[in-house]
Image 1: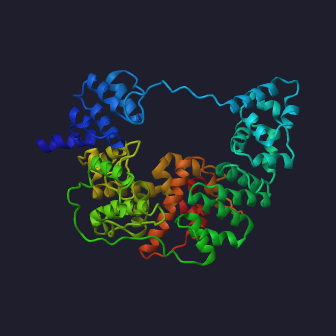
Image 2: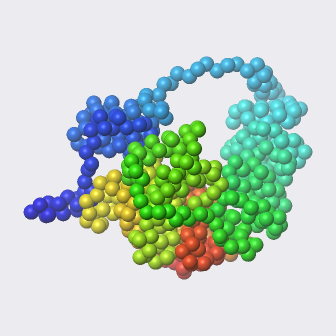
Image 3: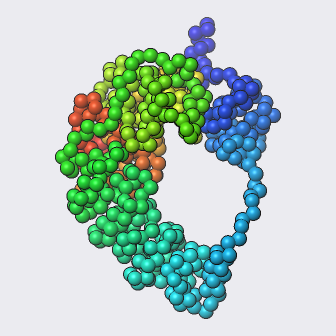
Length: 518
């Protein structure tokens, strides 16, 4: 009889609940992990409306799941909270008046009130042109819309603040001013990385390779992250075929699709990334499955004065290889890349390609930290969302608690189960990554667009790779693909990144969605 009742519960709910008390949650340190437990606490049937209203004030961020749970429990909208927890204050310290700023604003107002604002604006210095354009308002900028000369634009492009000018030109569709973006920028232009890359791709589409190359080359210097610079250098090479860009590219410490493609172009190997081989054992006094323990460790990792290499030694055992690699990566300021391969006894029974995609996703999702919690409450090493945990548990007819996803082997098991579904439709690791991150519905819609991953032009399928509008899915897919190639090679399956990229246009082998539409 008990087994029958248990089976009914499994089929009905898919998981059972871990009971939390108010005091337990209250005593947790503020952060993502506590937010997750606040969400769980509010959902409990025995949690009162008053308790929910009290505990919500301790959240540092209210996501959609927490908002829904709170509204359902209380019938009220959640309060606004600060990122440190507690009710946020709308009061702000008074701004100090900058006399120079006030003079510039007054000059801008004068210009806009004149019979011919554009004529007045043209007589401004480049820095005043940039300032007044940015502060003229949408209606005022329409009055300034004109096609500048090359000299005028290049002078403006050397001024800090011009990046905002470019963004406003694009956003407000100032068609005459947009023609300035067709010009080659000054070599010391202050246009930001993102805008330069967009302008570069647009120049490429217009067939202006020289301007595109210059845009990408300047973007490589304006980048604030190594991978951004690598992307820009790759495209500067792609457009110009100048191998000097490749030589710079392969010197990068970052392992990404662009540096791997650069190595392919130069005939270099993939002897990259550290895969630690650590002794068996457990970390004394630390539970790798406890999100609160991980939260407290993160605070230590990011505290000034912490000796990270010494701290890493405490976690130099196989069960904590993810944490060890995380700390060592931080100690190197991200210049040393780690590619752990934990749980070989479990994963080695899978085909090599499945092992590689699991490792690739786990590395990107959690860096192999078992007790990871995301801002959206994706949980564990494979960062599985609560709704999906419930669905997978129901499929397997298992009783699981959300916290069970902090058990690495169970997380890998459930991640593998989800991949069984995704790979039944998607056969290319890039498309699997898109679906894992943004959902299979999003990926189906993307692939069925007639102009994505189909053309065999000089810049495809790389150009399609850049045009995926969902920035998170785009970035995630690129990172997982690079991980996948590295892991395949580490597992003894030798493959080139460029071969995988080039196969994206082969509808017959990459997915079922496009094959159905042929």
